[in-house]
Figure (cartoon, helix red, strand yellow):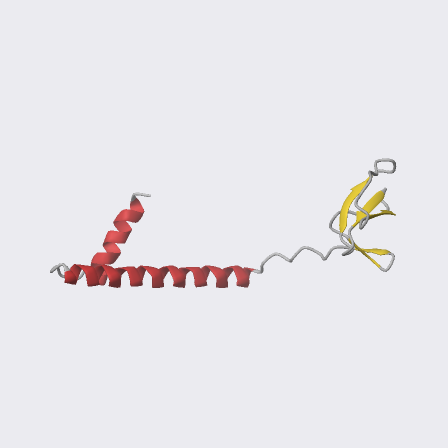
Length: 112
């Protein structure tokens, strides 16, 4: 196997022996084994394995993200209700109460 190495040390491509092709003068072919991939780098004459994939989120991290999303959604809805009430008052209408706004949102939600 051969790895095509960029000047930065990044492995650009890995091919079987005999499948090498002419490459730009800044690139070089280096002998490697079948474990090397284009996620490796090459430094000081040795291949460096890619970093491990990130660990999955913990239950607490997922919970925190859901809570943050819910807070953002609630803040967005409350802001929109405030803006609608400003427009209703400007048009000479009574502002909606929180209960009326909630019922209107729930009615739309049920249609989805």
